[in-house]
Length: 467
RNA sequence: GGCGCGAUGGCAGAGUGGUGAUGCAGCGGACUGCAAAUCCGCGUACCCGAGUUCGAUUCUCGGUCGUGCCUCCA
Image (cartoon, rainbow, N blue to C red; front, side, top):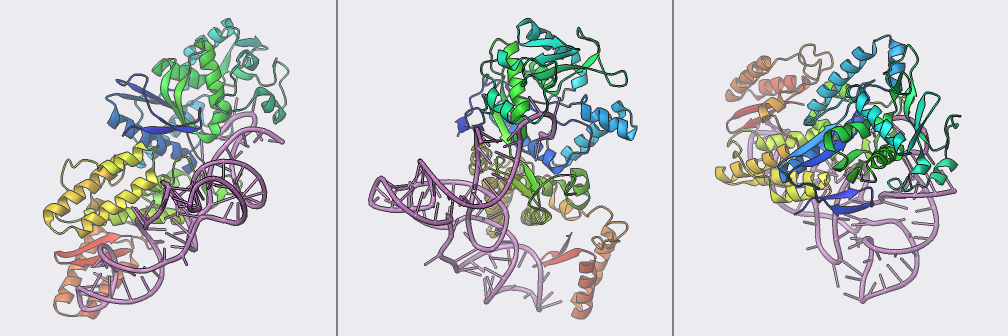
């Protein structure tokens, strides 16, 4: 079965045909590093990580580029507010971003270009646009001339006239046309800036992605991804810049956009105080639970992120790990079941893939012979691993405890019990059970339950888990 | 005002022109010293109206409700 993707350009699901099957290129808009990544930032990371995994399976080489925007007015403002130097702020935020996304089992992109390392490319691109009559300099700014591009608005399906009707921002006096957008702007002495033919300044946001994608993937590449909100103006402007600079060559063949995340039914906003950062969620939930939650709805649908949903995802992963736990071990090198491959290749249908994982877990639990069970476990593990899930072995998984639980026990979740404490109590309980002292056995079990440890008596002894 | 998206059982959430999504929750049973885990069984769910059709939750049109974007927010 072939990969199909919903292309925003055509608003329809299309069979993916690479420009060069020997090497597929994908560009995804990455973070502006001024603040900790929140759950909404994490969704495209997980979505395009899945697409990356699918592509890597289907094609011998995939180049996944995700930029880091480290020059931006939000960064300048944040630095001024906090007093932290810009470079320290961007380095610290980028490092945190990497750690958080790795915790979600997102593979690192092949190339992660930084805007500040591509200023020369941006300047060259802007000069090219000026030479071709698509941009003009005015009062230290350089602006893209929207009327110079006949197809402007094709991706977002808006005409420049319509855009003006809804414009909420006053038109700067140096703009020839109200829709024109900034490619380069002057920097004050206390703002980061680079020398350019138009004086000391810094790039506009859109030109950064055009320059970086060209540098690493060429003028035209296969897939460009990002959040739904980027369709206009960011991606529209990227298309305008790149295709005008490259004599009309399209920027990307397929445009893929993920839907937004709401929190407990509301749009995320700082004023509502419903802003979950990935970092703080990782204190209370394993990264995989966050990942699975983000996969629980189709990527183009809005996703309502709730604590209850997170708990359910954790419970689901527990169920799958439970199936994998114990003997016999999963068969090694088991293939990913074709139905799971097909679900992902059908426009990344992760909810369907998850339902298939549930069924695979059921097959494991119902397996009669050891050989059958081992094979079924192998299939479940292979499928889950393909989706970036169940990467830990079951014993490690069930020993996971929320932050602050293991040592302190102040919130009750770990009860301050170490693994050794737990093993000792289980032994004491086993002794009591052997002596038919069930009152004592139940007392110990309750003690452990109060500490967040659940016991499971089996034919081969007692297993335990936190949760 | 413009451009989109959505409406599926208590909840989450796929999908399909005619048969079961799946999970959670709930009920009953098996297993267990009791539990837990697991297994088995149990649900006349497809917003409203019209149309197309032998047949529509699925296609078309209209309506209602909800929701996103409209110059730098993933």
